[in-house]
Image 1 (cartoon, rainbow, N blue to C red):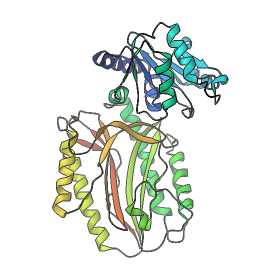
Image 2: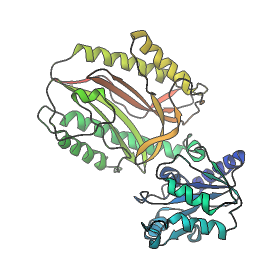
Image 3: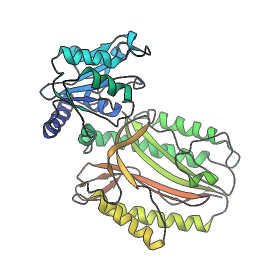
Image 4: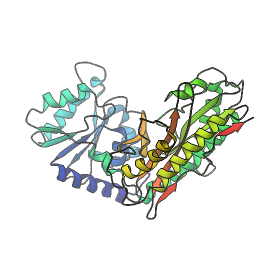
Length: 389
């Protein structure tokens, strides 16, 4: 286990308090990140049905996994053996039979089928089929959306979680320095990413890295005007910029970072735009302090962009922590105008300043921790446009 049992119990009590406030007696959490948060379970098994189940009065959650993955649950969770419930291989890809048929049976056997049941209606991997099985199988239950209850429970990190994110940040720095080194004219994008990934997995001599919940993003040339592009076999070209967005990972905790590299002669328009971008990013960082809201940070950020007449429609940040594919965001706080979430110590978010134009763009981002006094950056690297002449 990555945390002491005491910390898992504190998490459970926090979730149960939130359940009580929302009138939920039984919570079924399908979100991979939430399963890890509640139980410690960590395996690449989320491509098929699994969940954590929390009863309002239970002293432990239940971990519901495929029989083939039971060994991982025994090894990776703090749960008693009887709280690990497995379903048979007969439920795998044998439609219309489905693992949630067995889950429904378990809920009925435990006399939980008339409770108020909270579901994570918008969680990754919670399919329409999962929902229909619960809805049809538990007609006497009061089913409602849990509204990302566990995600919100994860918003404020423990000191132990912060330590893991700081480890991840050191790995992020190594990955970015590797990117600066290997991105050169004539080098294939895929070869560069191979070296970056190697560095992210190697980590440091004290702690190794893990797979990230998002692939290394590497838009280059005209691709910098678009979002979320990955490497191809094309070669880097002199005179073009490349945006690198990556994250080191330690014990499933992420600390994302983005930077921009320009190959060839300095391009004054890109340099000036990056300076304006960094000014906006720093304004948001300076507005990050306990008692302020996500909206306050966003307003400070956009005030700078408005001054320069730069338009940006997308949000500029989101909360981070545990991450499994396909996303390292927590799906709670957004650094966006109108989000009135109050910042508290150990809230962590990824603040992204990406400026995209017709056929080019620049980007810098920081993983940020709210402290008692203000903001702390997880990574320590210059945000300036990195020009390689």
